[in-house]
Length: 254
Image 1 (cartoon, rainbow, N blue to C red):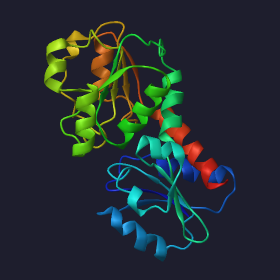
Image 2 (cartoon, rainbow, N blue to C red):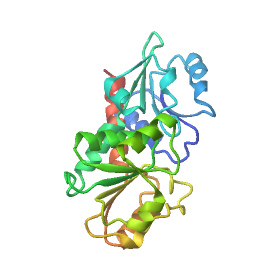
Image 3 (cartoon, one colour):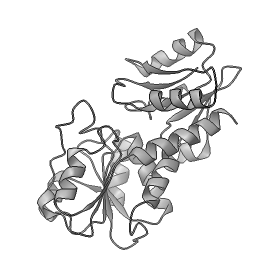
């Protein structure tokens, strides 16, 4: 048994993806949506399901899962978020981050992704945002983080000191001209709330802007539709979903 741990999982394609994969490989495995009201419930769940060999983690638990793990690999530790967990036969839990692999593959599909002069905008500050930050750092792409709230005081101080943080109000003043990538890592616009959209100055979009939404359901969010309407290149999170899933599968079978 494998699964996806989250709070509300009606939007996720992971179960369908792995169910089809298991069928194609003729494996008598299952992949379940594991909806938990509190992340602390993962421990009794694992104890009650001895056949659980691994699971993915999605919002809002990519950071909250860490204290419940016995071990965390180097990349996940640097990122500060976990989206894949391997359950060993002795019950030990080890966390990994395959979002970084998925986002790197997505970034490679976009034009001009090695622009090291113009900063990018990362919308949101959660676990997915941290994976994006990790990849942009590795690619030497400068960025600013836009968030309505900071997850903790330490992170807030770090961003202020390094001048990585920027407010939505400031974006509405400057517009998108000073930026290259505009990357949405928030769940705004995700199914079933497909009519939701971040309030941003879309009319200031310029041809050099590249919009990325990590959401894949719906295939085209209002965020991406507005970007296209104003002439920007736009990419959804489907590539990231597939690539991080395949990386997780390799971890579970290693």
